[in-house]
Image (cartoon, rainbow over all chains, first blue to last red; front, side, top):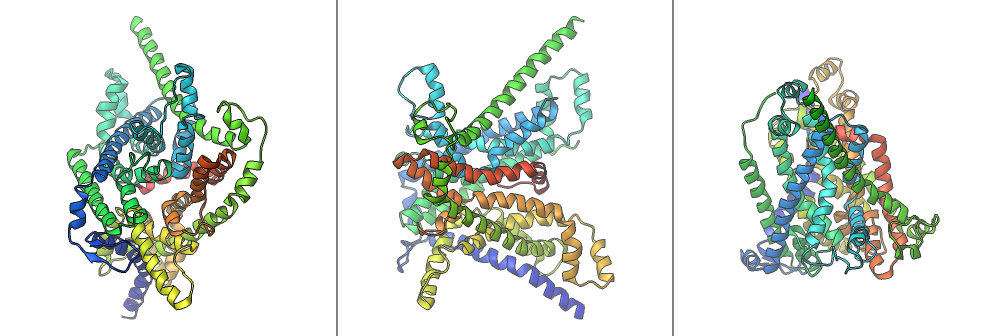
Length: 296
Length: 296
């Protein structure tokens, strides 16, 4: 009996601090997001008015919200497809080919992942600068003295400029991840494929891809969730949603409505919609990519 | 014989393509980063010429200006403080919790495990504004009682928030490692008369070292590079700030006042600690990633 008591006391002492902190700083705010989406509230004033689903009705008539949707979805699709294909390609090259300086490549490719998003944004702002930027000064070699391209100033281009920076940041991380799972595929499979004369491309699609499919599925789901968050961080640091709101994404629009614009309840309604959207999307992706897992 | 030569040629061509690909990616990563270091020692007038020109001399004044005039020195210490405190809080809270949650069965243990797993999906970006408003109203109460605010503009509170919001991932990572250790160690310790606490600190924690190191590496990078929480919670322009937030301000100031040198010096200050850490432990970091699975 005495021992049981000591055991429970130990368990409570260990778990309680973590639970309390997680409750205050994660559960309560998350609950507030959902609750406050039903209220009209400026954030600072004491009057909170219950308005039911009014915020959501306004939201579905809000052109700016739909623009942020389009941008977010474009970024999710574009950045996911490009990043994961490059990551797979480079992981395959670095695990399957005998490359000089293999370690150097692996180490360098991972560097963008350890840099702050602010630093990456600053680097890319310098690259994209219309007058003194690296990109335009390289391009001027081919284009002569034509008008500079406004990478961050042209509403049609700016979202792609953002996408490039996001791909740049993410490739290395996912490459290292795939390298780990690719290196666990037994060598004998490739040897017999070589004997039968299968090309490298064939080996990639028939051996590597099916065998790491489970890993790709998991990364895909996580990538989509983290992409919604990363696009917010990049937009906030690099363009601030501009020019003229053309790069607003889901969470940056939520942030600006809730924090800058002081329409807190409305911002939280956006949060609820985005939250549900990201869950639905990852469930969908999970369902679509479902296959029988293969064993080695 | 003929086939052999053709095969050899094909191999050579694909080798060349592979190296071109690898080196292209290498260049897109190394050149911008190296360029920032180069630009950080250029004089302001040099920024108007060719961006690829080598610096004419070493202009350390940029760093001095950034450190004192732009207050990056103060921000540097704030960043160090917040990162260190957040790491300390995180380890003290997360280690016992992960240990108990992964190795003890008690009423509600399954429920708590599920809760922390669900916490993996809650992103800070969704809940940063609710946390901020919680602090605003908390400060109102504290100010009425004691005359000064406590929650906002307080580096310690920022580190508590940082530690709390990374709890689910850390507990997940530590538990999955701790769960693999054999039960016999604890049983032997109990037979020898060691208490629960002694067993945890003396027997289990030393064995969990690899996973602890991984946590420290990951969260150091996360805390050091983070800017959304610190930007939102540290509102006083003359008060404490973290380095990435200071850098964001320099980026904005650069557009108005053309203080390029200072901005690049600021970027170097944010980058160098992470790069140095990475160079020392890059092997551990990329291995740890596969140990911990995923981070969104």
